[in-house]
Image (cartoon, rainbow, N blue to C red; front, side, top):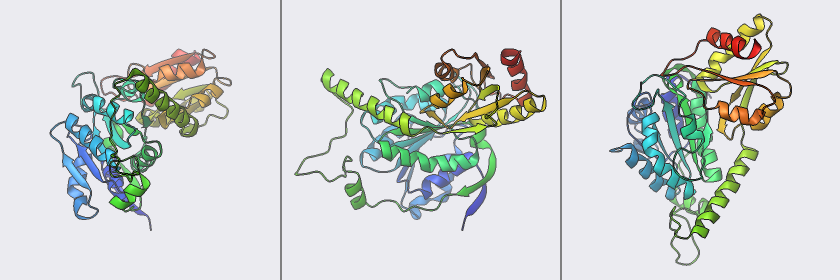
Length: 359
C-alpha cells in the first residue's frame, strides 16, 4: 500500500534516504537545506535501520566522512547549500578520482559570497562542470517537485553505485522549502557487511585474492598513471552520456519556439507556455532532469524545427552555454534570468520571449 504524506522537499530527501538503505549521513547546517539533517535527527534511524546520522564540525569534515564511508562500500551522503558545497569541492574531487559512490545534495541559495538564503540556480557551473580541481564530472539530477526530491534520492544512490561516482541532487531553495504531496518509496534493508564484501570488492571491506589490501586513493605519483586514470574516467563519462540522459518535454511537438529550464524555473515556464499558446504563439518547454549528462541530442533535434530558444535560469546565464553548444548556431539562443534569490514570474518570461526571440 502506498504511503502518502504532505511534506517539504528537504524532508522528502531525508525520508527517501532512510528508506533506500542509506548507511550514513554526514552534514552541517545551512539554510535553506537544514531540514534534511533535522528530519533525520527527528526520525532517529539509528534506532530502526542502524543508519548513522552525524553533524560534522564543518563541511570539509562532512565530505571526508562521506569519502571514508564510501571507501567501505557503504551508502553515504551529505547535503549543504551553495557556500557549503564550495567547501566540499576538494573532497568531491578526491571521491571522483577514487571512483567511489556517494550522494551530495545542494539546495541552492543566492550568491556569490554568503549571499542570501533565498533560492537560486547559480551553482550550475559549480556542479555540472565539476566545480573542484581536475578533469572530473558528477551525475547531476535536477528535481522540479517534492516528489522528485524523494524519487531522485533513490535514483542518485542507484546511479552512484552503478558507475562508482558521486551523484549530486541540484535543487533550489523553492523546491527544498515548498510542501507537496509525496508518495514515499518502500523500505530497502541496509546491506550487511558480508553482502558488501561480495557485491563491492573494490571497497576496503571487499574480498580480495590472497592477503592483498585494498587501498583507496586518488594519488598518482607518475604522470602516466594519472593520465591513465583520467582517460578511464573520461570513458566512463562518455558511457554515462550515452545511457543516462533524462528530460521532460511539454508541448514540444509543434513548437516554433523552445524554452529550456530546470527546477523551479521549469515550473514557472510551464505556465508561460500555456499563456503563450493562448496568444497563438507555439512555445514548448524542454526540462533537463539530468544536467550532466545534458540532453544535447534532443535540443539539437529541436534546433531543426524551431526558430529560437530561450534559456530561463535563476542566474546570470550558465546553462545557456550548454544549450548553445547543442544548437551549434542553427537558431538563436537567448537568456532570461533573475538574480539574488528572485524567482521569475510566468509573464516576465513571456515578455522576454517576445522581446528576445519572437520579436
